[in-house]
Image 1 (cartoon, rainbow, N blue to C red):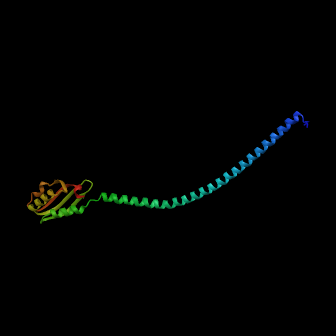
Image 2: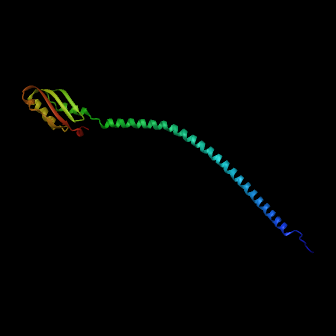
Length: 178
């Protein structure tokens, strides 16, 4: 059997090129279809993720808004507690000094003026003593107290014998009082 190929060389080349063209066209079409499919999947995934992100943002915003009121209340309470703490730290129990003065005052001593200064840590006591002896006992009692330092007892306080108007100034030992 004899096979004759009557197709010219140019035509053979053209046929080969046509086959190659159709093969490339098919491969390109398949790649294009796969690419379109993948892009559509990615687009759907992006839309789903965007919706979930929007939901999360809206929920977090609501939580943040509700927590802001709590945060404001907590800040207010903390400020009030700080203020109360500041007041408590600055508190001086003056009643202890009054009690100490009452115990230190013997019969015959009447106090009519007390000047307490927390900033300068001073006390000024004015009063009237029935006699010099009760005044000296009062002075000794104050000197023996741990609440007072640097006691100023002017000499004019003891020049008279009876009905003595006296004035005593001292520095307060606030560490002892607290």
